[in-house]
Amino acid sequence: MISPQDFLVNWNEEIYGLIHYNEKIIHSFSFSKETKDFLIKAGFPESAPPFLTFESADNGGGIRLSEIQNELGTMYDKFIYFGFTDSGNPICIDESKSQLVYIDYDNKNKVVLINSTIEKFAESLLVYVEFIREVKAANGRKAYIEKNIPKGLVEWISSALRKIDAAALTEGCFWTEELGSFSE
Image (cartoon, rainbow, N blue to C red):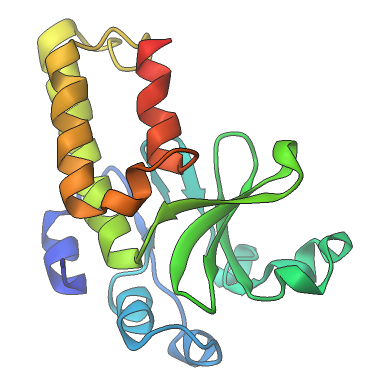
């Protein structure tokens, strides 16, 4: 599992800036020790492929989802909001499990797993950035956006993500949906 320090060394902060969270705010939640350490020492990227955006505490990140979406009800109290997907769905950490998830507004507010832990998410982002770099090297600057991706690279990223977090590649999960979009 990647440490916050290793993530900081390997993440290209010049391209994808980082958001750091206040220790006091993070310690107010019942996250695992590892999740708290990662958020305090490394944080989240401001943005990251595939089209994810994270928000600082000043912009609404690091609060209970039910505080910003009170129509969701108390069953969503355990979700701490940190950002959103390209579709505007909130990215949260499930406080009870320390899993990174998003709430799919278009699918009856279904909870969709992104990664089992924040560390596995960080590792997944690093290999995904490498995947995009390889796609562009193989098929040109616009290849990723145009989904012009060699089958071998799709197989490579699928295998790499599965090694990091097999649960995140089960049916209905974020990474499975993302990789499935390359075969449409």
